[in-house]
Length: 331
Image (tube, rainbow, N blue to C red; front, side, top):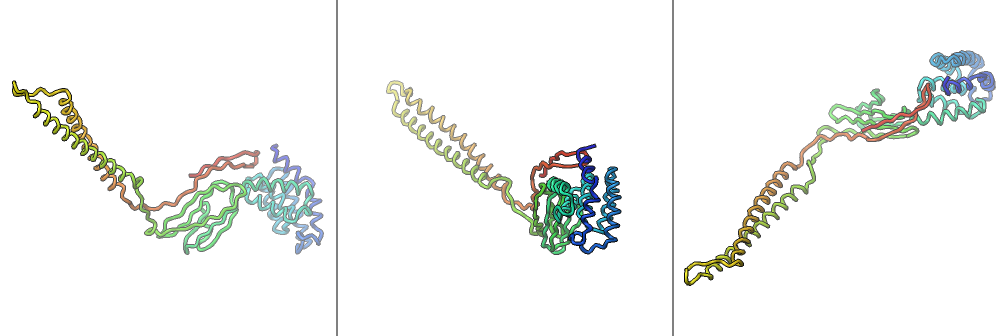
């Protein structure tokens, strides 16, 4: 037997007599308006539920308890129904039944059972969350986990199992708003579901930052400008070389043998001229690339997508075979 099964057995043994006997007192608020015959019949069905609970017949026990609650909404019946539902892994109704069991305090329950109900309540609270959905667009259909919950405008409040949920709001002619948030245990969240008309749901975006093409153009222009400077310097070097050659004519031969300094002017001019040509080529290519980038990066219309929530959740779980944890990732 699991720890939980042992706890269930301890809880319900000897429970009916003390709790239900107290509940018969007419001044008790949980007995107000319930006839003696209804109380007696509820007690008979309650005992049938207890017998099924002892035999681990969770579904049978829960059916008996619901039948008894239809006659008498007693905290003790709610408590034992919660024990059966706990075994059936139904945290939402389990939590609701435990709240009903604790509604009047410890009076309708034995002290130890009241304390145990509080412990279960705190534990199960970590498995449920409260969600409020709001949508103001008339005619929009709102669904929660695939089930339609209302047609807008309106609001829907629900208790859901903690973890991932799917929320959808849709209307013809509008972009569907679909979200998949992950709710943490004990969390209360409100989601406003807004929808945009398809013709209005267009965004203009660039492929990359707007400054990149202009920076490329600027670099290309700077390189080309550097080429112009080298070209002018090379012309100056060639002119100085030409003047030197004209001034060094040998009277005997009529020719000129350039000095090392004069030859260096020519060599420097040639190097600067080659550098200018290279800078012209690189700068021109950069300017052309910048022009292409300007065209490619012009604002383009895109259909706006509803952004989904990204989150990570480690959720404790309580099931028929013990406790554990589940990891949920949403993106």
